[in-house]
Image (cartoon, rainbow, N blue to C red):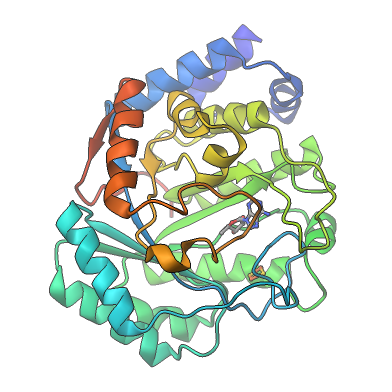
Length: 347
Ligand code: 5AD
Ligand code: FES
């Protein structure tokens, strides 16, 4: 095992069979985490970047079987923020020190491309030194280009799984892995900093699927990589499936850090939900981003992708203080600049 990890550290590459061995291990592999932490420090010191997350609508036209805000979930209490609400969240965030805003929603067709462009443009004009990240799903290349021209810097779109058969088990016929991948390539071509990723322990996932996910990421060379454990939501077809494994997710964060040393890797909310210290553990395994919630408290509980999501009660300021303490409790330092990706050789 030690040889495999050392080689991964030295070469950033690893064979399928070695990956399979690392993934099989159910214990936290201390050495893996040690090397990942070392690599993380070489590239990003002790810095942890924060992103202000604005979940501006939980309407979604899609029906992913795992997701709590899927269109067919009639129990979901739906909301939409107006442009004014969104700008006011960004303003609060700016005053708290945020220099990246992530605008996330379900695939909500009631916002036109012009609406999105206008929101992006307003935020970028008010705070030119800030980065705007969009996470609003699959759109045409023309739409992506329009948002980019309006000032959007980054885009998050997890590929969810790189295997066709597995993709079919997680999504209805109306969605396709082919389209998802082509969206990611379009975003790259346009010039966005692109984030992708997947859930760990989603129903029917095998270690072979995870290896394919890592291979797809090697092709894509994304700037950001978000992973988190699958967590069931009561009102979805996957309500009865077991949650993903914390340990596996942590090991994968460490593997990602070693394969993609430059990457911005968040310690996700799902990780903090599966274990009260999950995000701290994520940072120690190599993650270097956290994404506190800037959405108005009155809608936070409603953006419920899975059960028992954390941080839905507190004001952002409280969240931020709590996060700063959590980050320093594991020896890191929360920084508030834009936190762009380090230059890397991705296309
Ligand atoms: N458990 C964990 N993560 C989820 N996501 C969606 N539903 C769930 C769930 N039940 C993740 C998906 C999506 C991201 C915004 O949240 O990977 O891309
Ligand atoms: Fe909205 Fe999956 S349910 S994109």
